[in-house]
Structures are given as structure tokens and as C-alpha cells.
Image 1 (cartoon, rainbow, N blue to C red):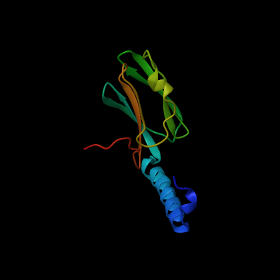
Image 2 (cartoon, helix red, strand yellow):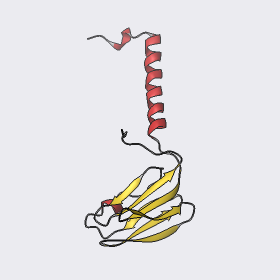
Image 3 (cartoon, helix red, strand yellow):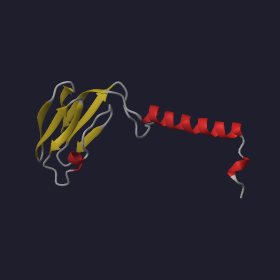
Image 4 (spheres, rainbow, N blue to C red):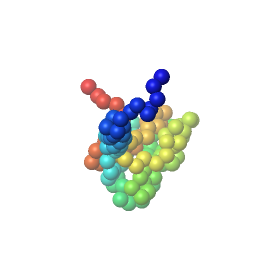
Length: 124
């Protein structure tokens, strides 16, 4: 096994720059843009579009009951939902464009939209 002492200055510099570029690229590509509004859906239809500039709470009807969505300081979250497992409530604050919280049993969702979406997969 070779020791690292065999790496030359140019090789080390190339490796370091490659790592730095990879970190920068991951941050630039996977970072969502600034969100400016929340799109709230109920039963698959748009219930309301709300700007994130004003703090508010919105009651959204669903098949199981009322879900409550909070808008605060440019963020949104589902703070209350009648669904049994509370996954959408536990998701917490949504901050970037493209983030979404979905309460499947109650068929309520909130999605942030804005300049650029944060992608977790590519569609074909």
C-alpha cells in the first residue's frame, strides 16, 4: 500500500479543487429558490394560493375534518390535521420553493412555489 507522501503538489491541488467544486455544485443544484407563495390543495383541487409575506392561519376542509396551515415569516407548515399518523404535521416548516407537505388521509397539501424548485428526482 502506498503512502500519501507520493502525491505531488499538482495532484493534491487538483483533488482539492475537484472536491470544492463538487460541494459547490451540490449546493447550487439541490438548493431550492426563494418561495413567494403557498399553494394549498384540498381533494386534489387548488383551495387557495396565499402569499408568504403575511402571517396567517388557514383552515382547510378535507374528508376527515379540518387541517390548519400556518404561514409565518415566509414559511408554511401544517400545524393541525385529523389524520391518524400526523406525518404532514411532523414535517415541520417548509422554506424553499418546491417543498411540499401532504396529508394523504385527509387529502390536504401545501406546496411552496417561487423562482426555482428544489428537485429530488428527475421526470421523463
